[in-house]
Length: 323
Ligand SMILES: [Zn+2]
Image (cartoon, rainbow, N blue to C red; front, side, top):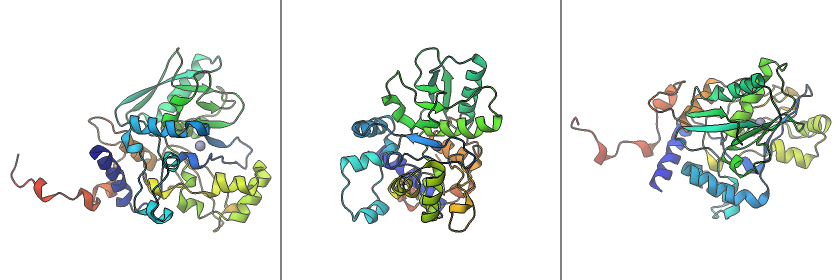
């Protein structure tokens, strides 16, 4: 319990220190799918069947106690201080793997040439230089199972992959071949790997959702994706719960943020969307998956120059005498 509280406070600390109010964790409120104007497949965070939500939350919390939802001041404001139901708690449970160094095994659903397998795994591992997670190809059934079949780009979120039957993929990279450009490998494979590491869509952050013009979004997604207003509400306009604060300030250049055109924003400016892991992404992964004995690859000086009151050195812990 102490560890859990401490862990959550540490993450709250980093969010508070940067005056960030958004959330990086609330996967199951939405299955976010982003349409692209260029006709590329959008990305969805794949959702488990409803019957598995509680089990998935229990598993996520067992693997990494920090995943348990924070029902703090913001949740209390939003919910009128009502205690959450188990299902509501499950919905805001995040799905990060634990902070211990971890290798995730990777296999391929279809027969895939060695050069393509290597290329995909190398882009999954773009995150490995910043955090203590590594993707390793296996000839057995992998924890991460990649298909290149129809269905667009998607991944299950973090620890949810463990609950997927072994005969099914956990990640889809529709149509990726050796002819696919490096730019697309960087933008899509690294993004999907981010979901596998537990990161939801950055464009569902409240600050970014607030920039979207509701009616224009309805028109745009009806035209490009055939979505009803209800679907647009669910997929685009419902922000991640502030109850689960864990992350960086909202960042439209995050690789976890997809592009949204200026034609649907209130200010007419596009939400740019990330094209690669940026400094903020790298810093965040370095915090949730800390590398042993090494400083984060990207130092966050703002976070280091301030901390929440709960981290203030207590009277009993003052190091008055040298050890
Ligand atoms: Zn995505």
